[in-house]
Image (cartoon, rainbow, N blue to C red; front, top):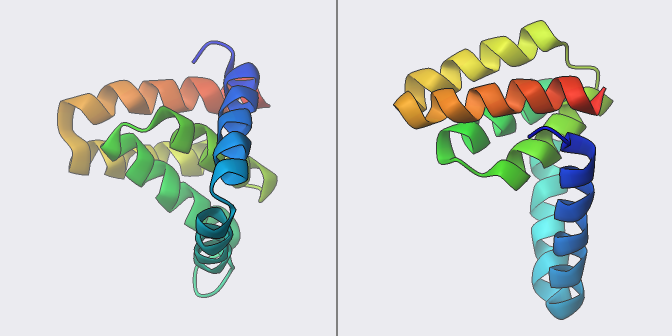
Length: 111
């Protein structure tokens, strides 16, 4: 993800286009997303890092970008990201190693 900012912008545009095409679904999904990312026992940054780890294990590049952006905005550090990526690799195997590298590169490029 050499140009993470441009890739994130493109992902947001695609999401906005789908939200316009399916507003009821996206409104409902937005509620789920807001609830899932609200700080509780885990802080908002930690929840975003969990989402990054799952996105890495699942191989969803746009999801990685969305949640990296959220993790950065909530104050996650690169060291915390690396720990989350280590868990993603444990759970996702070889493909997660590739996406972990992409996530780290994108985190650095978003800064």
